[in-house]
Image (spheres, rainbow, N blue to C red):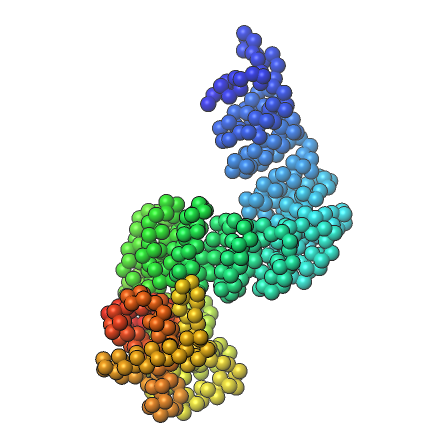
Length: 624
């Protein structure tokens, strides 16, 4: 569009025969055109017109230009206009500060703020609320002092921004004091306090405020829903999500991502599919964030097919989306597919991240691809990615499971960063798999000395002693645990049936259908005996008689969940189990046989990975 065509329609201006302007458009007309500019080309044409007609110094038009450039994503043009403004006012300063803040350029905004003060221009309430939006706690405290001195601290917008500053800085006590003394509480200020509580782990306090509100918008619901999800309470996330739907507040993309994250944590595929259907029927936009959340949910809930379908349908895929699919393949043991996807991603010119390599190294570990694992670990240097504890953990897992225990041990000792109990636990797991009691004792002695021992590492050592029949060693570990105040985390397995999650502990008798479950357990035991099953009683951590050990194994939580799945679902239906701990060797063998006897596919997600049991075999190839 040419300059002439853009300004051609009256009453903008008229021209004489010598092409000089007889009169210029009114300021109101120019302001209207600036505000209505839909692209940078139109705005540049108007800007050029202002310069040609000597209007570039008009403070009102300059202010409008500054705002429009920023809204179209051209902050540098906005800065140029600001720098050419003669005698800038608090409004022009506040606008340019705000434009930097919304572009996450807080340091530059702070420099502009200091420049404004040196010119003896006093900030107003909007200046303070803009500056406080993303500033760190210490800067926020300084701004708080200035706001108090200038009489703006009681302004609703400023006070709300101050509550947010203290909450983001984890000073929740100060945030609440400011909130409690607000002259007037708005929906925004209530939501800000709820968000502050939720993000700092004070979920109950957040819920009390939330329940006391008369009106709630989608942002407020999102703050509470996400608060539960971020602090390990996914079931409450889904309950609140359903309450939100009943309250007739329409969820947005943020709500959907939080709800899907809760489904992923719990591994509840049916609930995740219901949310997917809701999104489709209500035409909620599936942007890259929502799409990636669907991939993550489907992967962690046991349906790689659905995850890949969503992945293939997405047009706008970023590296986070690719990472989610790669990690999904890795956790299910489809290692070659994960590596192939990595190669496709790189061919498209996407830059791998540290998460990408966690997925790839996990894939190598799950398949025992030692040389490939080393290659990818060294490839990180090419992409300027510094290995984190998670990458080292993947390599220790890879080496340990491949039986290269000493190499794994030396690898940990030579790390550039401090190791943690999870990393040592990975090595202890490898010691248990390969029966290396000596190295396990050496590791545990180091962990106790460094005060790094956890319930998990104690249990692993106890497992190793029990497998070796060293009951004195088991007793010694138990005594250490008791003295250290460490409790063993109980095994818990869950199964979703008809959109309801059923949880089981070992030997659980609390379920309403316990009688039917235990009848099915007896039936399962008969099937197993007929197929030559021999209980692996050496993994039982108690010095019991053989019969008692067999009885203890027979009521493990995953077996109760499988029994419930068999009596509660139709023949041929896939059974999906989620367990909080690693599947034990005996239950792994039992589940393989049950899948063959019943003709059912059984998917078990344990702490480490997925196991797909089909017709007597497992996707892990007994390498886990």
